[in-house]
Image 1 (tube, rainbow, N blue to C red):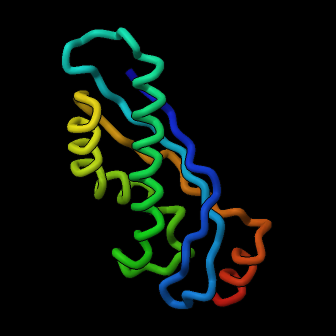
Image 2 (cartoon, rainbow, N blue to C red):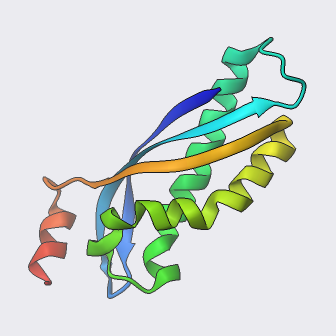
Length: 126
């Protein structure tokens, strides 16, 4: 099964200037199978997995500029690296919580709210 998720805009701070934060949204997907191969209750399970995956991704994206030591302005191009970094831990947590085998958790897009004041402040600093 594959579940798409979307994390609505949330503030991410710039490590170089913590008083600058930009609203960021994230889209992605998680691929998994139930351990027993059954699809019974799949809709409710998919919703729970979508919510949990979105939470793990949100935390990882918010922390990424600090953990990787990169400027916030580079966050959008780091979707693949962040996916790779959280793959093992997020998969293990989803397996433990929902008894599923996760085959992939992908961040497909990280997008800044380019109309926000925070984004304008970020760009003006460069």
